[in-house]
Length: 259
Image (tube, rainbow, N blue to C red):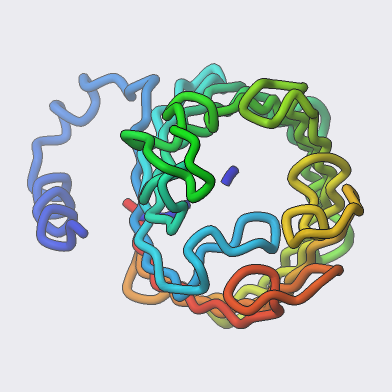
């Protein structure tokens, strides 16, 4: 999911001015909303999904919207441009929902269900067969636990796509861990990721081998500037065959804005 990022500087300033000038009584009588809406938009030099490029090594534009309730339940959608040919088209559209919250002191749980959609009119996939635009969409439940390890924040997660027609009646298991830490007195954050795939979406299998297991990894740094504007860079790689613009190691730059 999941995971995405999203320009309203003038609107933000206008809202801040109103908040300062509004009468105190109006502020006191307006109850806080139980629902929060947030959005994000990003430009990346390559869209890498678990180490594999879905944009053929080219830049992609991405964005999404999330709606969160104070109870912890949330729904959202996220999209990215891709280079998927006649089968997958030119866009990935994700729809998801779940619950996130603290389950113990310093421990947060996130569980949900994600639906990957690839809107396309179908067409000839290069083999003379006609592609059904619904055959490539698939479901994937996910769960993760986040806690702190010294100065770092650690996330341990799992996602499992059961056997579905869109996956060739095969399943796919993905387990991963993320580490993140901020450099004190700076806007810079560091991150590291290691993932393992067992199934039809394994990088070596997608690259044309018979191995349906594989690792992906990344290390990166990002900095938040000018409020919600974020710039970042990551080194991303996978094990297995290196195919240029698909599974080769690469450096990805990101320019994102969240609101």
